[in-house]
Amino acid sequence: MRTLSNIYRLGMKELWSLWRDPVMLLLIAFTFTGVIYTSAKAMPETLHMASIAIVDEDRSPLSRRIIDAFYPPQFAPPMLINSAQIDPGLDTGRYTFVLRIPTNFQRDVLRDRAAELQLNTDATRMTQAFTGSSYIQQIALGEVNNFVARQQGKSALPVDLEVRARYNPTLSAIWFGALVQVTDQITLLAIILTGAALIREREHGTIEHLLVMPVTPFEIMASKVWSMSLVVLVASFLSTQLVVRGLLHVPIAGSLPLFFAGATLAMFATTSIGIFMATVARNMPQFGMLAVLVLLPLQMLSGGITPRESMPEIVQNVMLAAPTTHFISLGQAILFRGAGIDVVWPQMIALAAIGAVFFVFALRRFRAVITRMA
Image (cartoon, rainbow, N blue to C red; front, side, top):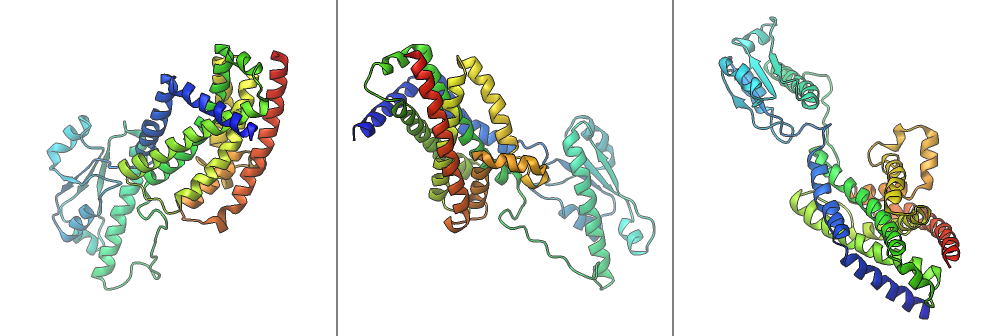
């Protein structure tokens, strides 16, 4: 009971210390609001509300079908303009794409004559220009083929392919980006907060006060783990409700209590990593540089940015020792696909085992550092 009491009181001390640190509080608030919102909204590899104008010189049912085929979220509603407005619109950046449908376009298509569409693109917007040009070609040609097939009373292809996207019907990158950012920021802050808490003790000289108190290194470390984990859990829960669901309107398919249970196991490991890094670094600048070297591989090679299947096999096997690999797999299964405990229990066991190993390893290092200081 005394051990639990010491862990609780030391943890409360960490919470009060964090409350008096405005920089850390600002970091937590911005990480779980601004970072998640901007990362989800500003994904450069996706096409979102691209501006397009159409010069409809044909004014036929086919040209109307092509115009109606461009709609959000990939494209903003098309603006109808005339030929004289093409160059000024592109020069001023008002339009990224201008599609010109010539006179007699439908007649030439139905008579199997050479029919051309002209697509003007503002190539200074490189990412949208590259992606959007392909989208527009596919959409326009698809509408032309379907229109001709209907006019001739036959199917455009021998087989009709009905495509249905599960879990993300509109293929919105915002849905994916917002939820992945939540898992990434949980890992980021779990490491930074616990490491910074220990570094702060050393820089302020309060670690010496703890050494003369009747507390053990285990109690000191456990107090930092539970207190910082609680802060991250509360912040991530509020972010999920207010930013992901509220501002971004991203639906969550699975159980949030199950997800945060997995997040707790993940933070058991990541907070231990943070404490180990703090015992290696001598001050906050060194800890910050070390955090960059650790966090980048954890986030980039765990399957959140790039699918693990596309990585070399040796990288996949090595990253199985990282808690973030199992946490991201668990998070995507629950938040995207609505998986239950019967699906994600292997990841939860893996997180518990990895967390136990990292905790013991960090505790041994922490005890060695404390002994030298004493």
